[in-house]
Image (cartoon, rainbow, N blue to C red; front, side, top):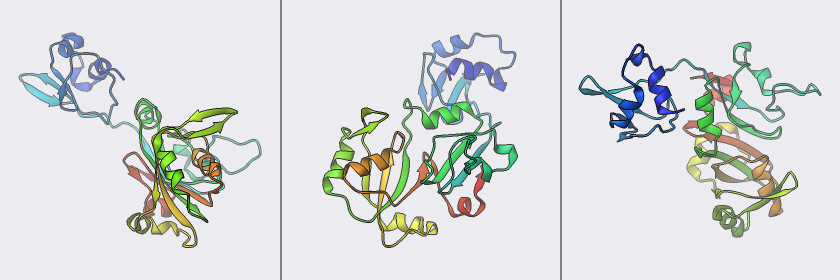
Length: 246
């Protein structure tokens, strides 16, 4: 969203006569603490916007008229609005009032974990657009350890996978053995002790990316769980309630 439109539509500027672009050009707008003199893109409800009016800087409080729901998608559920074969979909786990919300990304049928649902298009854009790389964290269980070359290649930014008949080069992916601290943090997931657990941190999410990366090194995913997306983390409360509105 352009900063001009955000200011113009803010309740503090209802009936304001001075052209908003003049406020911007004269350096009377700050985005995240820095003066800006051009009509830049911002992410509402994430970026901090200040405007100098009436001889003082005023923070434009975000408009919070939106819904955000954090939910746990179990294995076996599809991330789709409907299924011609009547397989279970994640909307089946939600009350009717949330079935119009859109999901920030998907998890395949055999994966589980955190989904963020919202009706705020700009917030959704900030979570999924390549323009604003947003970290997604996964715990992935295997029967065997990876060759060290896998971790090196994944982090290099040159890892190649085949997707829809084309070879695609991935952004760097941080892969490491899951630390004791993270295993303790997510012990409520009943992580199998006979599996070797790795943590993957991605800034993109191509279809079945982790599974395809693993197959390239002849290692196969036994359990894949998204535990973090941006600022949000999977919690015991979300698991117990299936969803939490924030």
